[in-house]
Amino acid sequence: MPIALYALTAGAFGIGVTEFVIMGLLLEVGVEFGVSIQAAGGLISGYALGVVVGAPLLTAMTGRWPRKTVLLGLMLIFTLGNAACALAPSYGFLMAARVLTAFAHGTFFGVGSVVATGLVVPDKRASAIAFMFTGLTLANILGVPFGTWLGQAFGWRATFWAVAGVGVVALGVIGFFVPRDRAVQSGSDWRADLVAMARRPVLLGLLTTVLGYAGVFAVFTYIAPLLTQVVGFDATAVSPILLVFGVGLVAGNLLGGKLADRYLVPTVLGSLIALAVVLGLMTFALHSRVLAVIFVGLLGASAFATVAPLQMWVLEKAQGAGQSLASSFNIAAFNLGNAIGAWLGGVVIAYGPGLSSITWVAALVPLCAFGVALAAIRLERGQPQVAYAKPLHKLCD
View 1: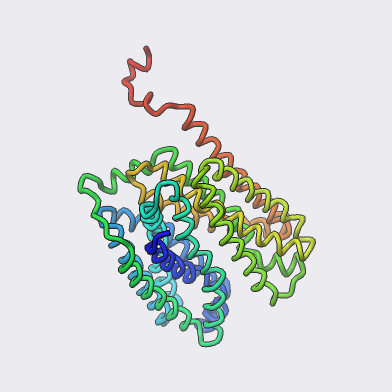
View 2: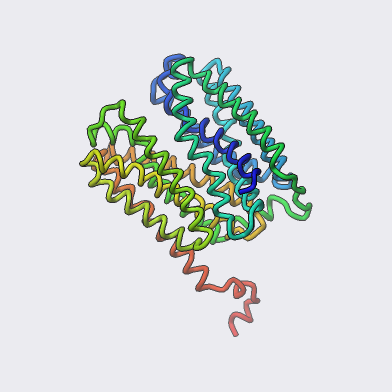
């Protein structure tokens, strides 16, 4: 892989840390600002909302800029946003800073995916996307545990200063190693990109992403109570078990990218089925500590095995025009799936069959994603696009 991809991976690492590290610091934040743990948890939802809104908005606004300039601007927003988090004098200010930081998230991964595919030969494009997303998986394995320890030892503000430092490093390596590119031609604008993005295959691809990841986060959001209250682990065992999840993320991410390079459509369908099977079987694995740990790793692998294939699929459906916008929308779709999944899991716990049933309910969601993807493939193969371009009287002949 070219060295420029390592630069993109560094940016992805920093963004991954700032997204997830707050989960381990909610208690400290709540105590300092005098808010409940539920209110502190809103910092996670606020970030997700920032990704969903910011991804298409910033991508459309910067559509004519050189992509390297966009990436550098996003890392500057990311760095300043984390510095603002570290200096936050109130809960409301911290929330606003988190949302501002999140604006860089979706567009970075969306534009970065397009840049990554342009750095390699055509049959390595999905692997290039997976390689960039390795930064996100490593953030879960290394960055989040270290950031949590740093925040608990020296105060949660120290963690955000450290992440801002990662942003400075990423800004430097992207500026140095990512090659220059030209601005988009004046004949292309965000309106044309939006029309290209709004094609039915792209929209069905986005819906597939939302449904696929809703199933993942319906379980992962509540992984700690599942491990402690259902399986019977002590609370101190949760962090080491999540390392197993992180290892699964890395393995599944790289495997999904390699398979998608050769067999994109089968990999999209197969990864969704694999995710549904793992979630379904996990229902029974929760009765055994050993099997529970194994299936936590399998959940990580099957979850991230879908990322590069789904991202590559949407990029191909955009067919050149609007790729950056469609790619950023797909990152927003992942985060929308996260939010829906967390809500679904809460509904199952509060009003449904309960905590122990989350896994089999969650398994139904990627099955729906599989159905959407299969329908999209059949519609695309069965209905020639050229027929819609004919005049009405020709169609009637």
